[in-house]
Length: 208
Image (tube, rainbow, N blue to C red; front, side, top):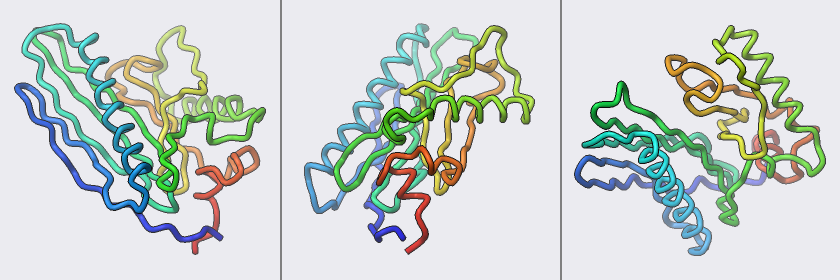
């Protein structure tokens, strides 16, 4: 049974500048200020990195950027969210969207990578890769020719209730029109290889 940890307080802040409107979450009210600061710094750092990616891709003039976010999990000491940045610059054929997932411990401020969710030495990459390819076949997703669909230690992901959701950037494995290919995996199917006391183990525990 999971020990009760209340959700964290989240407010929406907006950064506005010529051609830029970015809505982003800010954590507040945590008992430990250093944890709160670590999470908020991690969010801002990711937003800045996404802007750098857009500057490399949208190389036209008069760029217009809109940033948004979604909270996927805010419970049991785990905060998982998705940040999205859409930018269009003239005269590009179309805009480009960057989406990134962030998952934190609201008790320690730790930011989790995918490999942090699993036991050291486990075969989590093989397990997840097999599941992703199974879903590709089942859903008949259009895969780019020559794409080797694998799951990497730094793979994009988020946690949503009882699922680990693996996703890929635009153009990584599918054509642009297919959007962001996302692959939900039940946490119950990952319990045997999940890190002890890690987010997957915490989310798969019984309700309080």
